[in-house]
Length: 103
Image (cartoon, one colour):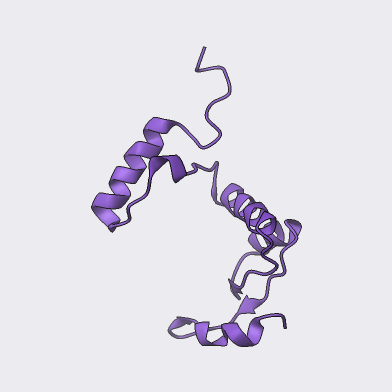
């Protein structure tokens, strides 16, 4: 029975389809439902992202300096280096990204 068995690891197809429709309508973002992954929560999504990036040979990911230790730990557990991107009154100081690379 579908209710008690393992579901699609990407999430229910119906949910992904409705989400793709919403993203297109409300946000102007067009996504194929087959390329959407439903996560169990933010931490699950961050951990999954960390593993995917590492498999693609990404070595570091900058995060905003106010980030939670839980989230940065999930990325370091995946083997990524996490330089912290400073903030100012306008938000992330993206102009500092080049200086952070490999620092």
